Amino acid sequence: MGLTRQLRALWYVGKQYWDRAHALIQTQDDADSCRIHAHLHRLDGDLPNAAYWYSRAGLGMPDCDTRTEWEQIVTALLARDSDDAGRPSG
Image (cartoon, rainbow, N blue to C red; front, side, top):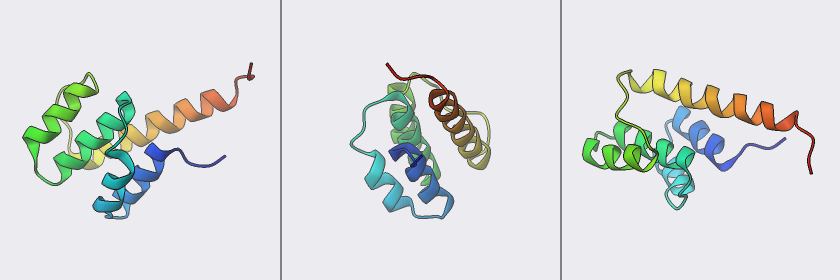
């Protein structure tokens, strides 16, 4: 199983490659991508832009630190991918 675009972007975030992560995620409109996009702008200190992307994801600004948020997003996406892998197709 390959990594989704969202998980690849988060991998780049974990490796401190902000630009690569942003390039992968910036053109995506789904809620997960918008949340990751928000996280990226929170990391770079652009909080108004982050707030915009959190709202696009249907979320508010998190109360936790950025590392904890990163871990929460990764955990949620991996759990969802794991659930999807166990479901029969069709």
